[in-house]
Figure: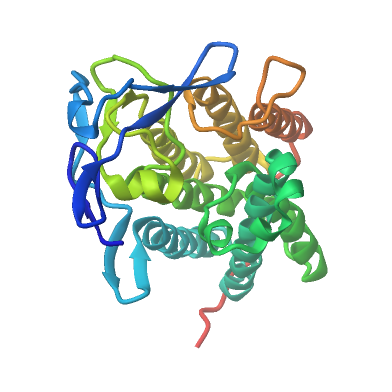
Length: 325
Protein backbone atom coordinates (compact mmCIF):
# COMPACT_ATOMS: atom_id res chain seq x y z
CA UNK A 1 0.00 0.00 0.00
CA UNK A 2 1.51 3.31 -1.03
CA UNK A 3 0.79 6.45 0.92
CA UNK A 4 0.75 10.17 0.33
CA UNK A 5 0.63 12.98 2.92
CA UNK A 6 -0.93 16.44 2.81
CA UNK A 7 -1.01 19.27 5.33
CA UNK A 8 -4.66 18.65 6.11
CA UNK A 9 -4.62 14.90 6.60
CA UNK A 10 -3.76 11.44 5.34
CA UNK A 11 -4.58 9.83 2.02
CA UNK A 12 -4.28 6.18 1.20
CA UNK A 13 -4.95 4.05 -1.81
CA UNK A 14 -7.23 1.03 -1.50
CA UNK A 15 -8.03 -0.99 -4.60
CA UNK A 16 -6.54 1.73 -6.79
CA UNK A 17 -8.87 4.40 -5.37
CA UNK A 18 -7.62 7.23 -3.19
CA UNK A 19 -9.55 7.76 0.02
CA UNK A 20 -9.13 10.14 2.92
CA UNK A 21 -8.76 9.03 6.51
CA UNK A 22 -10.65 10.71 9.32
CA UNK A 23 -8.76 12.32 12.20
CA UNK A 24 -9.08 11.12 15.79
CA UNK A 25 -7.68 13.43 18.44
CA UNK A 26 -6.93 13.04 22.13
CA UNK A 27 -8.36 15.69 24.45
CA UNK A 28 -7.74 15.78 28.20
CA UNK A 29 -10.29 16.96 30.75
CA UNK A 30 -9.22 18.75 33.97
CA UNK A 31 -9.56 15.46 35.88
CA UNK A 32 -6.86 14.11 33.53
CA UNK A 33 -9.13 11.41 32.11
CA UNK A 34 -8.66 10.74 28.42
CA UNK A 35 -11.54 11.11 26.02
CA UNK A 36 -11.31 10.11 22.39
CA UNK A 37 -13.21 12.47 20.12
CA UNK A 38 -13.58 12.36 16.37
CA UNK A 39 -15.30 14.48 13.76
CA UNK A 40 -18.34 12.46 12.73
CA UNK A 41 -18.06 11.45 9.10
CA UNK A 42 -15.62 14.29 8.54
CA UNK A 43 -12.79 13.60 6.13
CA UNK A 44 -9.35 14.94 6.94
CA UNK A 45 -9.75 17.81 4.50
CA UNK A 46 -12.68 19.15 6.55
CA UNK A 47 -10.84 19.40 9.85
CA UNK A 48 -11.46 23.00 10.94
CA UNK A 49 -8.56 25.41 10.72
CA UNK A 50 -7.18 26.53 14.07
CA UNK A 51 -6.78 30.19 14.94
CA UNK A 52 -3.74 29.64 17.12
CA UNK A 53 -0.72 31.82 16.56
CA UNK A 54 1.91 29.18 15.76
CA UNK A 55 1.59 26.52 13.07
CA UNK A 56 4.15 23.74 13.12
CA UNK A 57 4.35 23.17 9.36
CA UNK A 58 8.10 23.61 8.86
CA UNK A 59 9.40 21.33 11.63
CA UNK A 60 10.05 17.70 10.74
CA UNK A 61 10.25 14.63 13.01
CA UNK A 62 12.69 13.06 10.54
CA UNK A 63 15.41 15.08 8.80
CA UNK A 64 15.92 12.65 5.93
CA UNK A 65 15.19 9.06 4.95
CA UNK A 66 17.36 6.80 2.77
CA UNK A 67 15.99 3.31 2.26
CA UNK A 68 15.31 1.81 5.68
CA UNK A 69 17.52 4.38 7.45
CA UNK A 70 16.09 7.63 8.74
CA UNK A 71 17.68 10.36 10.84
CA UNK A 72 15.19 11.51 13.50
CA UNK A 73 15.41 15.16 14.47
CA UNK A 74 15.08 14.25 18.14
CA UNK A 75 18.11 11.97 17.96
CA UNK A 76 20.21 14.68 16.34
CA UNK A 77 19.18 17.32 18.89
CA UNK A 78 19.82 14.92 21.76
CA UNK A 79 23.31 14.19 20.40
CA UNK A 80 24.04 17.90 20.05
CA UNK A 81 22.81 18.44 23.60
CA UNK A 82 25.20 15.79 24.89
CA UNK A 83 28.14 17.26 22.98
CA UNK A 84 27.61 20.90 23.92
CA UNK A 85 26.60 19.97 27.46
CA UNK A 86 29.82 18.01 27.99
CA UNK A 87 31.93 20.77 26.46
CA UNK A 88 30.39 23.26 28.87
CA UNK A 89 30.94 20.89 31.81
CA UNK A 90 34.62 20.37 30.98
CA UNK A 91 35.16 24.12 30.53
CA UNK A 92 33.56 24.92 33.87
CA UNK A 93 35.41 22.03 35.50
CA UNK A 94 38.77 23.47 34.46
CA UNK A 95 37.77 26.78 36.02
CA UNK A 96 36.90 24.96 39.25
CA UNK A 97 40.11 22.89 39.32
CA UNK A 98 38.56 19.48 38.51
CA UNK A 99 40.37 16.92 36.34
CA UNK A 100 38.84 17.24 32.82
CA UNK A 101 39.62 13.60 31.93
CA UNK A 102 37.59 12.38 34.88
CA UNK A 103 34.80 14.76 33.90
CA UNK A 104 34.68 13.27 30.39
CA UNK A 105 34.42 9.77 31.87
CA UNK A 106 31.81 10.96 34.32
CA UNK A 107 29.87 12.41 31.41
CA UNK A 108 29.82 9.02 29.66
CA UNK A 109 28.52 7.40 32.85
CA UNK A 110 25.83 10.08 33.06
CA UNK A 111 24.78 9.58 29.43
CA UNK A 112 24.47 5.79 29.62
CA UNK A 113 22.68 5.76 32.98
CA UNK A 114 20.51 8.71 31.95
CA UNK A 115 19.26 6.95 28.82
CA UNK A 116 18.65 3.74 30.79
CA UNK A 117 16.82 5.57 33.58
CA UNK A 118 14.58 7.45 31.15
CA UNK A 119 13.57 4.19 29.46
CA UNK A 120 12.99 2.40 32.78
CA UNK A 121 10.69 5.13 34.11
CA UNK A 122 8.83 5.27 30.78
CA UNK A 123 8.05 1.56 31.16
CA UNK A 124 7.13 1.90 34.85
CA UNK A 125 4.74 4.79 34.19
CA UNK A 126 2.87 2.69 31.64
CA UNK A 127 3.52 -0.63 33.39
CA UNK A 128 0.05 -2.07 32.73
CA UNK A 129 0.52 -1.75 28.98
CA UNK A 130 4.03 -3.20 28.95
CA UNK A 131 2.97 -6.01 31.27
CA UNK A 132 0.31 -7.02 28.75
CA UNK A 133 2.70 -6.46 25.82
CA UNK A 134 6.17 -7.42 27.13
CA UNK A 135 7.56 -7.63 23.60
CA UNK A 136 7.07 -3.86 23.24
CA UNK A 137 9.72 -3.18 25.90
CA UNK A 138 12.49 -3.99 23.44
CA UNK A 139 10.60 -2.93 20.30
CA UNK A 140 12.28 -0.45 17.96
CA UNK A 141 9.70 2.23 18.77
CA UNK A 142 10.47 1.92 22.49
CA UNK A 143 14.22 2.02 21.94
CA UNK A 144 13.85 5.13 19.76
CA UNK A 145 11.62 6.90 22.28
CA UNK A 146 13.22 9.57 24.45
CA UNK A 147 11.77 8.19 27.68
CA UNK A 148 11.01 10.21 30.83
CA UNK A 149 13.66 12.80 31.66
CA UNK A 150 13.09 12.63 35.40
CA UNK A 151 13.93 8.93 35.46
CA UNK A 152 17.11 9.55 33.54
CA UNK A 153 18.09 12.35 35.91
CA UNK A 154 17.57 10.26 39.05
CA UNK A 155 19.52 7.22 37.82
CA UNK A 156 22.27 9.44 36.37
CA UNK A 157 22.73 11.15 39.74
CA UNK A 158 22.96 7.81 41.56
CA UNK A 159 25.50 6.34 39.13
CA UNK A 160 27.54 9.53 38.94
CA UNK A 161 27.83 9.75 42.73
CA UNK A 162 29.04 6.13 42.72
CA UNK A 163 31.65 6.92 40.03
CA UNK A 164 32.85 10.07 41.78
CA UNK A 165 33.33 8.31 45.11
CA UNK A 166 35.14 5.43 43.46
CA UNK A 167 37.53 7.82 41.66
CA UNK A 168 37.88 10.17 44.63
CA UNK A 169 36.39 13.15 42.85
CA UNK A 170 34.88 15.99 44.90
CA UNK A 171 31.23 14.97 44.70
CA UNK A 172 29.44 18.25 45.33
CA UNK A 173 31.97 20.33 43.39
CA UNK A 174 31.66 17.96 40.41
CA UNK A 175 27.88 18.07 40.60
CA UNK A 176 28.05 21.85 40.63
CA UNK A 177 29.90 21.99 37.31
CA UNK A 178 27.58 19.36 35.83
CA UNK A 179 24.39 21.28 36.60
CA UNK A 180 24.66 23.94 33.84
CA UNK A 181 25.59 21.25 31.30
CA UNK A 182 22.54 19.19 32.29
CA UNK A 183 20.29 22.18 31.74
CA UNK A 184 21.85 22.96 28.36
CA UNK A 185 21.63 19.37 27.16
CA UNK A 186 18.01 19.14 28.27
CA UNK A 187 17.18 22.33 26.35
CA UNK A 188 18.48 20.75 23.14
CA UNK A 189 16.44 17.65 23.89
CA UNK A 190 13.23 19.65 24.29
CA UNK A 191 13.84 21.31 20.95
CA UNK A 192 14.07 17.82 19.51
CA UNK A 193 10.79 16.93 21.24
CA UNK A 194 9.13 19.89 19.56
CA UNK A 195 10.41 18.82 16.17
CA UNK A 196 9.22 15.25 16.74
CA UNK A 197 5.83 16.36 18.03
CA UNK A 198 6.12 14.35 21.24
CA UNK A 199 5.47 15.55 24.80
CA UNK A 200 2.68 17.79 23.53
CA UNK A 201 0.44 19.96 25.67
CA UNK A 202 -3.27 20.21 26.34
CA UNK A 203 -5.65 21.77 23.88
CA UNK A 204 -5.74 25.54 24.25
CA UNK A 205 -6.60 28.71 22.35
CA UNK A 206 -3.97 31.06 23.76
CA UNK A 207 -2.22 33.25 21.14
CA UNK A 208 1.01 31.22 21.36
CA UNK A 209 -0.67 27.81 20.90
CA UNK A 210 0.99 25.46 18.42
CA UNK A 211 -0.85 23.34 15.84
CA UNK A 212 0.94 20.28 14.49
CA UNK A 213 0.14 19.33 10.90
CA UNK A 214 2.93 16.93 9.98
CA UNK A 215 1.41 13.45 9.37
CA UNK A 216 4.69 11.77 10.30
CA UNK A 217 4.41 13.12 13.86
CA UNK A 218 1.01 11.46 14.23
CA UNK A 219 2.32 8.22 12.76
CA UNK A 220 5.38 7.99 15.03
CA UNK A 221 4.22 9.32 18.40
CA UNK A 222 0.48 9.88 17.95
CA UNK A 223 0.62 13.68 17.94
CA UNK A 224 -2.87 15.21 17.58
CA UNK A 225 -3.03 17.05 14.25
CA UNK A 226 -5.06 20.16 13.54
CA UNK A 227 -5.57 20.87 17.26
CA UNK A 228 -4.10 23.99 18.97
CA UNK A 229 -1.96 22.82 21.89
CA UNK A 230 0.17 24.29 24.64
CA UNK A 231 3.80 24.21 23.37
CA UNK A 232 5.02 22.52 26.55
CA UNK A 233 8.25 21.51 24.80
CA UNK A 234 9.06 25.19 24.28
CA UNK A 235 8.05 26.05 27.85
CA UNK A 236 10.68 23.63 29.12
CA UNK A 237 13.20 24.78 26.52
CA UNK A 238 12.96 28.35 27.83
CA UNK A 239 13.09 27.11 31.43
CA UNK A 240 16.27 25.13 30.87
CA UNK A 241 18.07 27.79 28.81
CA UNK A 242 17.34 30.40 31.48
CA UNK A 243 18.39 27.91 34.16
CA UNK A 244 21.68 27.20 32.36
CA UNK A 245 22.59 30.88 32.02
CA UNK A 246 21.72 31.57 35.65
CA UNK A 247 23.69 28.55 36.92
CA UNK A 248 26.84 29.54 34.99
CA UNK A 249 26.57 33.01 36.52
CA UNK A 250 26.00 31.57 40.00
CA UNK A 251 28.83 29.01 39.73
CA UNK A 252 31.42 31.76 39.47
CA UNK A 253 30.00 33.34 42.63
CA UNK A 254 29.09 30.27 44.67
CA UNK A 255 29.43 30.44 48.43
CA UNK A 256 29.25 26.74 49.37
CA UNK A 257 29.61 23.32 47.77
CA UNK A 258 26.39 21.94 46.35
CA UNK A 259 24.90 25.38 45.83
CA UNK A 260 24.69 25.04 42.03
CA UNK A 261 23.32 21.50 41.78
CA UNK A 262 20.90 22.34 44.59
CA UNK A 263 19.70 25.40 42.70
CA UNK A 264 19.33 23.35 39.53
CA UNK A 265 17.18 20.77 41.31
CA UNK A 266 14.97 23.43 42.88
CA UNK A 267 14.48 25.51 39.73
CA UNK A 268 13.92 22.54 37.45
CA UNK A 269 11.70 20.75 39.96
CA UNK A 270 9.43 23.75 40.48
CA UNK A 271 9.28 24.53 36.77
CA UNK A 272 8.58 20.93 35.74
CA UNK A 273 5.89 20.56 38.40
CA UNK A 274 3.86 23.43 36.93
CA UNK A 275 4.58 22.55 33.29
CA UNK A 276 3.03 19.13 33.98
CA UNK A 277 -0.36 20.82 34.42
CA UNK A 278 -0.20 21.79 30.73
CA UNK A 279 0.97 18.40 29.39
CA UNK A 280 -1.58 16.55 27.29
CA UNK A 281 0.20 13.40 26.13
CA UNK A 282 -0.97 10.09 27.63
CA UNK A 283 0.99 7.98 30.09
CA UNK A 284 1.50 10.70 32.70
CA UNK A 285 0.52 8.41 35.56
CA UNK A 286 -1.61 9.47 38.54
CA UNK A 287 -0.38 9.55 42.13
CA UNK A 288 -2.67 10.19 45.13
CA UNK A 289 -5.39 11.08 42.65
CA UNK A 290 -4.23 14.64 42.01
CA UNK A 291 -0.68 14.64 40.64
CA UNK A 292 1.30 12.82 37.98
CA UNK A 293 4.23 10.55 38.74
CA UNK A 294 6.55 13.13 37.20
CA UNK A 295 5.18 15.84 39.50
CA UNK A 296 5.97 13.66 42.50
CA UNK A 297 9.54 13.22 41.27
CA UNK A 298 9.76 16.99 40.69
CA UNK A 299 8.80 17.60 44.32
CA UNK A 300 11.48 15.15 45.47
CA UNK A 301 14.04 17.05 43.39
CA UNK A 302 13.01 20.29 45.10
CA UNK A 303 13.39 18.65 48.51
CA UNK A 304 16.84 17.30 47.58
CA UNK A 305 17.93 20.72 46.35
CA UNK A 306 16.63 22.34 49.52
CA UNK A 307 18.61 19.92 51.69
CA UNK A 308 21.81 20.83 49.84
CA UNK A 309 21.12 24.49 50.55
CA UNK A 310 20.46 23.75 54.21
CA UNK A 311 23.74 21.80 54.58
CA UNK A 312 25.86 24.63 53.13
CA UNK A 313 29.08 22.57 52.89
CA UNK A 314 32.11 24.90 53.06
CA UNK A 315 34.03 25.56 49.84
CA UNK A 316 37.05 23.36 49.20
CA UNK A 317 40.44 24.69 48.14
CA UNK A 318 40.80 24.51 44.37
CA UNK A 319 43.95 22.66 43.22
CA UNK A 320 45.90 24.01 40.29
CA UNK A 321 45.61 21.77 37.25
CA UNK A 322 48.34 21.10 34.74
CA UNK A 323 46.94 21.03 31.20
CA UNK A 324 46.85 17.52 29.78
CA UNK A 325 49.16 16.87 26.85
